[in-house]
Length: 610
Image 1: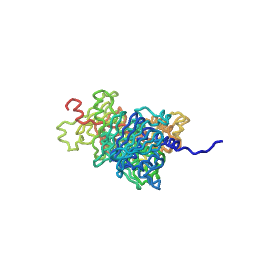
Image 2 (image 1 turned 90 degrees about the vertical axis):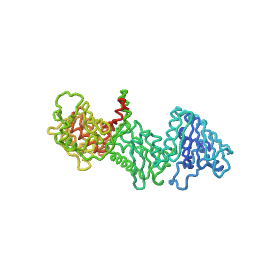
Image 3 (image 1 turned 90 degrees about the horizontal axis):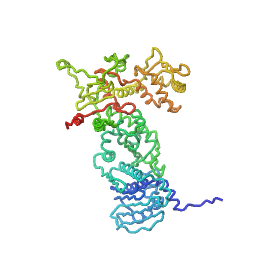
Image 4 (image 1 turned 45 degrees about the vertical axis):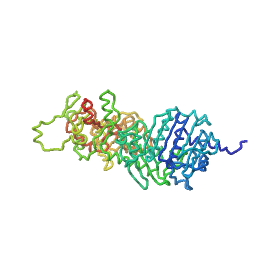
């Protein structure tokens, strides 16, 4: 017969340690949080063997008395929690960390409180507690953890290599240092290069700390985020859409000073960049959310990295709206990190990195480009319309410049070179516009740029009065697999709202009767194939309105100026002016850059003039 019995205190601590202490980085997190809660202004961390052999955390906080030190290593003993479990204003509060660490490692804690004549030290080895003894310590607390998991050797098998564990420790320290710029952090050890983050004393300490950790490139290519709604405050910095990464490791989120990895917040961050970044790229951001403790539950998991908001919809809407507004306000601004990478590509033939140096944002009046693009017969629809009718074109199209006599007799105009994106001077390979600015040159990808402009106009038209349609004199009949036909026809009414009118034409074909007027002449087959692929990826219950940005982006891609299209000088200039007046035009709908800029100083370096 099974007998119910009470677990021993040692066994309870070991079980709790499985939740609290997952790896060495978990220990560092708990100890550094304790130091911050103790009011430390300086925290020093030393590790060895990725933290499995040694973790030492020293701080200059308030310290503990002999009695407090003896209680600190018992489970559920804490000075940070009141009777109200929702009123949590410290990083730690559960009273489990030190007891859990002592159950699976050799733990030594030395601390001195200002009221004590000297410090005290207590040692715990695999759950065995030694009585406190005097220790020489000026102030603060020193915690040393050695032989992690020595009493639970099976757990050692789950640890990764020394380098991976050391990297995880570094990431934890970075996140805590970012959340608390008022504290100095140093990280050293035999398994790493030393890192030091001095106290940020500037007018904006958070920005200064971001520069220390993420580098000046992030500071130069980020957007300030500040918003508040119903007592919830959002602040921080988010990278430009063209300043992105291949993974989400450079996303830092904080709730009331606590680093978190919450799915709701990560999803909101992703949604804020939904229509300006490719799905395989990830934004760089450091965002802080501050609200009353009763508005968020941080007691979801012992690791305290997940949180639950009382009103998750409000928090998500605040983040998405603030990000989209900041990106909109940035106008055509693009990342500044491409200058050196572009120069390196010129010198070595290597591909340029994903970063570009922008012109300064400026308010620019709308131009005639929109009217030109939406005219009944767009100027670029046929080769003859552009003035270049021959079937094979040279790779370089020069722009005719009026003679000095002719210029002297023309009215004074704004010097286009003084515009942020400059004056068009040439077209390369029927796809790249070369523009001269007052301080360098700009290379524009005409297809990517116009794709973004058409997309923004589609969104604006849909929000105002719906998208105008153009009726095809002869419907396009597109043969497709029956499954794709079924998916498209099932959403025919929703496509009609976007200006695309389709109907069935037998079991394996679709007839296209109307298309969005904004898109002009387009390849209807390619458009329907892409839309069918999108529908196959989405759930049947997903409405197109929920995926409106993606559908509009797909349509805009098929209705924009194609690569290989010759443009007249005035058309190129009109495209540049429209880009300057359109928010988000620094990147296309897939997150790729629409232009690259080289400063005159960069060009001079290429020729050894500097």
